[in-house]
Length: 286
View: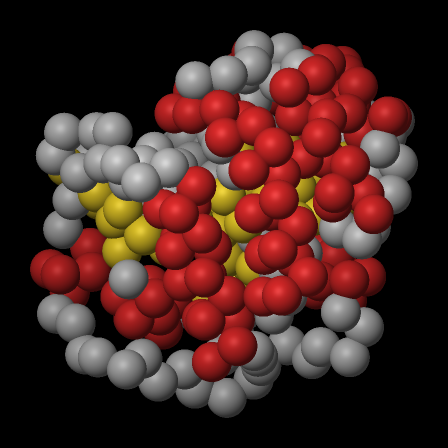
């Protein structure tokens, strides 16, 4: 199988679900090695611990930064987490994470963090724009909100997460974002089978095909299903390579020009059993 680069994965624990779900850096590296994923853009889990407010967010951001520093070939870019309810303290933490820890932007999940995608994110986005960085945004209703951000902050690269998880988001992204050059897309949790009326060929035809990328949504989803979907899709090998690693390589190099995709074997710090890596209920990892 061709190599894959993951632009949508999370480190840490989501405690706002029962049971809680999460993964360490080592466990994710084991999953990567098992599934042919050679590199990834890391971000914290959404819905993580917040008993200590912004101090918890800082600990989550530092965990991502440590992984990027320890394994720079495998994790060339890292994103911070943000909580809009932290207001100015949260903006300050994002700036610290980017300036001191080398993170390049942020990830947010409105459904788990309790906000919309409106002006409440503008102070955070301004910090990222100062560094011409990257934001991974989970949708909150129409992608028109993300399109508005992309036009307002043209120096930021935006990734729309889960762009094709259902027919509504698939069509909405094509309608709202197809002509915006700083919007990219991941196909995390794209359902199988690939339905012809809104499958990968239709998505590639409707969006900029060179900005559609693989995302795992680990630790929540058995992302091998998405890899299988790409491999079986009725698209040519060049398009499959683009989704698997080509587009992600260009995105990473736009922020880190010296980075080279790793080609050697990945050696996780701990050996996990198949059940520890892939036990699932349906497509959902346990």
